[in-house]
Every structure is written in structure tokens, then in C-alpha cells.
Image (cartoon, rainbow, N blue to C red; front, side):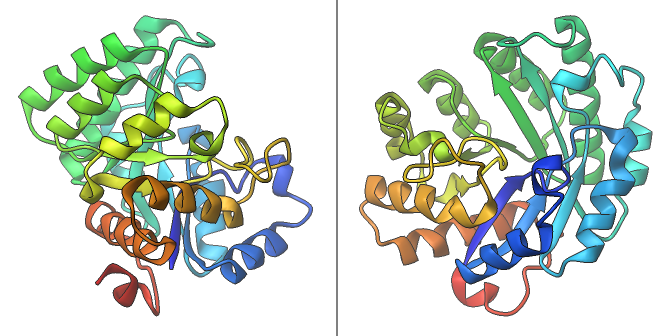
Length: 267
């Protein structure tokens, strides 16, 4: 069994065939999906999706692109919403200096609020980091010094230093379809060095479809292709990598209910 640890089932790309998308994931051996929050004010939508489908969980948080829309979200609000039984994490939150759709100072402040909520709840923080390695490292080190929290660097596409520091601080690192792209040899080199006990896989669907589906709309079923490449990099079989990443997911997202067969995959 595989877990797609990060997708966006609420996006319009899936609206016309959401049941089929989830069914194809099941058929491909993807036993659990996490639909990720990008706006706290839309939490009811994510919760409803998680309630609608067995084997789907959600998170609560503000994407850095949307930090300017929700600059005043408090840690208390995040904590309260995270009590929903199907909410298993905080985020995604972080820094994105590639697009700079929200002011950087606002992104930083909102990110720290999410860290505070993750620390208080004990739920893992889903971190978005793009073109912001130096500031991300500085904030992670500073905040970890204030008190430990659990987290994953999602859709990792940063440099080796952020990967090294993330592992040093106890974070998990999740790889998406970018890992399969021909141009991503440097990323594959980084992925090969991440300890197996810190690896996760995801799609970030509907974006970043992996080879051989690159250029198409991504969907959770396609996570099998990323997991296959990750298995090759670590010299294990796809089944072994499924067991590794599912076991890691269980240890990080302890609130998730993975259902029948998950225990075998994590053994």
C-alpha cells in the first residue's frame, strides 16, 4: 500500500470526476490520501472531503501564496479546527519566494503561527518551501530552539543544505513527480542521500504529474511512478519502498487512520 501524503482534491480540476479519481487511486494501490489545506477559511471544504471518502484525511492551514489573504489567522484558531477527527496535520504553510504572491514578512509571520500550532497540537506541519532556502533554514532552526515540533518538507525541490538541515532537525522529506523529470538529476542525488526512515511520497495533484504522465493533469494514482523512482535510488523494490514510506507516514501522521492492510505495509 502507498500513501499520497499531499494532494488537493478540492481543486476544480477534479470536480467533474472526483469519485473516479479516488477509485483509480485505490485500484493503483494508494490506500490513503491527504487533501491539503491552502486557506484556513475554506476548512469546511477539506473536512467535508475527508468525511465523504474512506481513507481520506485533511489538514488545516494557509499556503504562503494566500498568506496575504489570511494574515490574522491565529494559532488558537488552527488548534481549534485541527480537533476535527479527520484533520491530521497543520499546513501547508511556509515560504515561496519564487512567485512572491504574498509579502515576505507576512509569509514569515504566518509560517511561525503555523509552527506554534503544530507545536501545541503535536500534529505535523506540512511545509511549503520554494526559492527560500536561507530564510527557511533560519526560521526552522530558530523555532526548533523554542520547542520541538514535527514536520515534513513537502514536494522537496530545494537544495542539499535544506535537506541536510531538515534531516538534522528531525523533519521528514517528501518527493513528488519532480523526482522523475529528466532535468531533476540533482534532486535525485539529494533523494538518494535522505535516510529511508525520513522519506515520504506525494503527488501535489493536480500539479506536477510524473513521467510517464508528465504534461497531463496529475492525480493520486500516479504516486506509484514517483515511488518507483525513489525505490530505484535506494536500491529497493517498489513494494519495499511502499512499506518504507507508508511506515514513515504512520509515524509522522499519527492521527491518520489508514485502514485495512496498512499495518502490513508498515511492518
